[in-house]
Image (cartoon, rainbow, N blue to C red; front, side, top):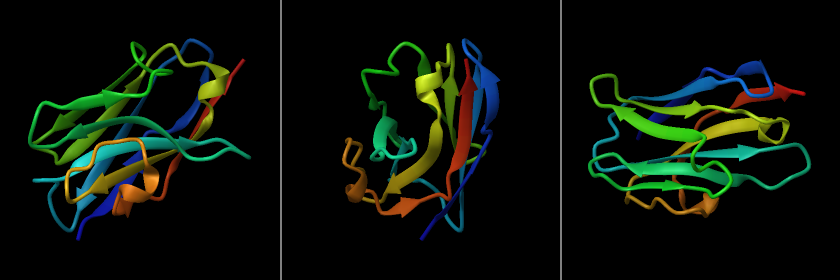
Length: 124
């Protein structure tokens, strides 16, 4: 069973960039899929991006495609979300999630493991 630890959140101005990282402890991602979700105050948790650790499949939500990039570092057992051209509507708590069966879709409840979340705030 892996534990997920996110890092890299913070405060940035509109148009700026942030880089989030999700590291697995207590195991490796091996056959997992790994995703990023976000949740703004008063809103439901929404899918941002995902990848299959052992393959080439990557999935993005439409509202971040072209601005955000999800990638993996096998040596560090880490998944990174590079966020560019940030907008105030990107403000949320960002969560890393993983599924041992390799699900990489948009439904949050299908993911087995979750990190504690990291705050991203974009000021206007």
